[in-house]
Length: 459
Image 1 (cartoon, one colour):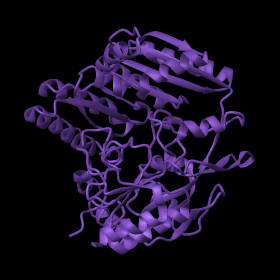
Image 2 (cartoon, rainbow, N blue to C red; image 1 turned 30 degrees about the vertical axis):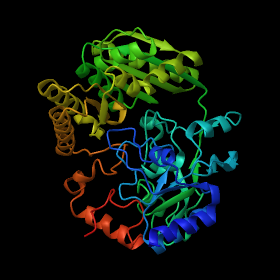
Image 3 (tube, rainbow, N blue to C red; image 1 turned 90 degrees about the vertical axis):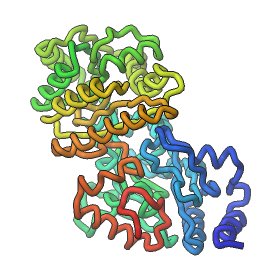
C-alpha cells in the first residue's frame, strides 16, 4: 500500500460515506468555470466540523498528499482544481450561520454558507452582507480569492469585510486570527494574510464578517452612450467628484447584444452603464440626478431609473448573467476570462487600447466590468479545437495584463491568481513574490496546501 492509498484508507475510516471516489464526483470537482481542462482529484472529502478538517489535513500531511479546498466551484483561474491530485475538501456540509450579533453588525459563519443564503438569513434584521461577485459563491471561497464584485466601489472587497477567521493550517492545527473589535494593533494581520491566499496557507473553517445596514432607499439606473470612451469618461467624472454610487457597471455593445438575446431585454446595442444608488430618499434622488447630468455631458441618453425592487432585480440579474449570455452568443465556445484593474485615471486608456487590440487581432471579446474601481474584463471566446484562435486569444490576454502593469495596475483585480495568472506574479511583485514564497514555506513546509498556485514553484 502506497502512502496515498494509506491516507485515503484513513480518511475513509474517519469520514465513511462522506469520502467519495465516484467517477462523477471526482470529475465535478475537477472542472472550472473557465477554460482549464478537467483535472479530477483522487478523492473528495465532505467534512462537517473544523475538527474533521484538521484531522483530514493531518492525515494528508503524513502522506504528503495535496489538499485543495472546494466551495461552489466558481473560481476562474483554476484555484479549486487539483492539478497535482490529492484530496478535494468540499465545504458543502459546513453551511451554518454560527452566530449573528446584530448590535455589533457582525456575523460568524461556516465557509460553505453562500452569500445569497447569508443575506436570506439576515432579511429580518435590517442588515446585509454587500460583497457581490455575481456568482452565488461560498463565503469561504470568496475570502480565499479576496473576491469583490459589483458593490466594491462603495462597500469594499472581502479584504475590507472579513474581521476574523478560523483556519486549519498545513500541520492540522486550528488557529484563530483577528478579533471582533473594530480595530487592533496587536501583532501581524494574519486575517489579511489568509484572505486572498487561495488555500495555499490553510483552509478557512469559519469567518467573522462585517455587516452593513440596509439602505433606506435604493434606486437603479441604466444609460446608453455613443461609445465605451464616453461611458468611461462619465465614470471617471463621477468617481473624481466623490459621487457616492453603490454600483457602476459597464457593458459594451457586444455584451448588450448578448444580454438582449439571453435575457429578453431590448436595450439599444450601444455601450451602457448600469448604476445603483443607496442612501436616504433625498440623497438617492440627488445622486441620481447628478449622475444624469454627468452622463448627458458625455453623450449619454435614455437615462432610465428603477426604484421598484422587481425592476432592480431584473436589471442586476441580467448583469450577473452576462457571462453566460456571452457564452450563449457563440454556442460550443469556451472562454478565457480576463480580469485586470488599473488606477481610475488610466481606465479610459486601458479600455481603449484593449478594444483596439481585440479589433486588430480578430478575437471575439465583449468587455464588461466593475469600472467604478477600475476593474474590467474581456470574455475571450474560443474554439478549443482551433489552435490559432486559442493562441490569438491568449496573446490578447497577455497584452491586457502587461498593459495593466504598465499603467500601474494589477494582473487581477478580483479573480485571483491560481495557475492562470501565475506567470505574471514576478513582473508585478518582483522580490515581494519571493517573500510570498517564504511565507508559504513557513506555513506549509511540505507544500501540500493547494500546491502549484499563487507563489513561486518549489524546486
